[in-house]
Length: 232
Picture (cartoon, rainbow, N blue to C red):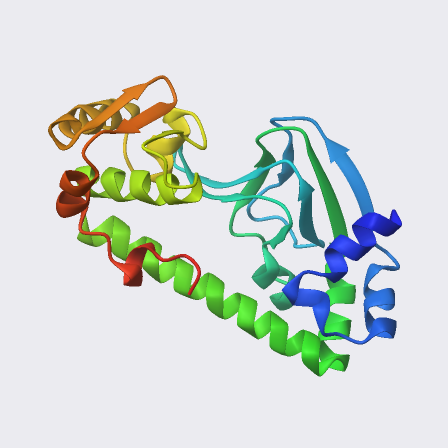
């Protein structure tokens, strides 16, 4: 593994406080690989052989059932994905594919579990990360079950606007078909939802969204930090 990427991984909260010798042992069997866009990385139901770290690019976590597919999360640098399966030595519950050209580090799950037993700081960091993931899942469930499709779209746009720096006009972070999947909607329902937000000053042209009446949209959306704050 190149030294620069070794440092990038070491600086993640998950690994930052562990002992040097344990981090060396953890990464001794690791390797880094480049993947083009739209390449499957893992498949749900398969053994969790590796903990993955996204160093560049973007990864879509998704699932399929009975002929249907849904996107669950987008993983961006620098972060890990499917930590719980690695710790529990359990099958993956999600599949993953690259959304764009990506560079991924793969750490053997058996080494992750071995160091978990040896390094208290690493174990505490894993608990903290899994707790954050659990809270994110609860917020996602609240968003899905307590809000209408129009309210989900409105709040997603407000969150995306904040990530884009707060400007009135910004780009969607992915194409509309995938956005519909993330929000639990069909592409047709998403199109109708965008039209339904026009009275609140929302216009969309391709992937570019403009919010002309910020206060009107926020009064309709009623953003709530117990659902929409992804940092806590």
